[in-house]
Image: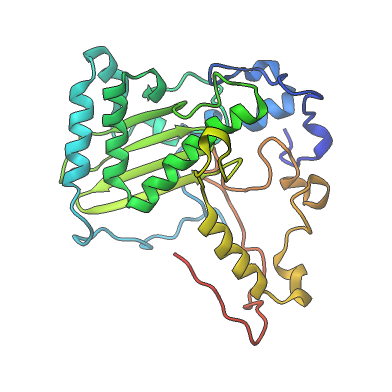
Length: 308
């Protein structure tokens, strides 16, 4: 099947409420074939031999190395052990998987078309859910954890705004899975997966790796009972500041299209289902040749904005 995508290949329902989503499950067999193919990429590819994202299909060795520097994992280890010990035995069987389980690579930033392993946060008792969230909090910076929790809350705000999919667009419609045995020495980690939130955290001693990460919010500012909740504001301002430094006369070098509308994008990014990005779910072995300007396309008098 061709990977070239065109807006007409992905017919969206004419009215709301017609996507086959019930209780955080997307029934892909009820979707148009092209849309089903696109949205099941992660499920199809997560058992493929891992290569990684490359520019020509050949991975570069030695880009990263393990060292003893970093932070103490003791708080995260203690939180993860407390979470697992608090679960019933039958829950623990699916809440913790081996470190090399293929489910590490099985995620989606939309709605899963399979029945995920791990524990769905809103199905946990309050104390168990609090202990699961404590693992995430102990693994991230205060600002990072606040961002994740804001995005989760805004997911429920979205359900209220559109008054639809209320059994799916909720604050805790996310699956949390521990991989490996929480330890200060051996590799272990966790995954938080669901609509607009996908985090993968790995500990190797004091070294922490967070990848892949997907965070999105719609809306980004809460309304009603979510008033005061904000997400991704700083990131938006930094991106806008950087965009303003770019030379308008060289936009054809660094812009893929004049807008995010499907008709203004290249065919491979024009699908309304999973378009507008390249390295999403199922993209672990993506071959992505360099694109954009090889020179710094900034105005001579501008200040370049850097972030890490």
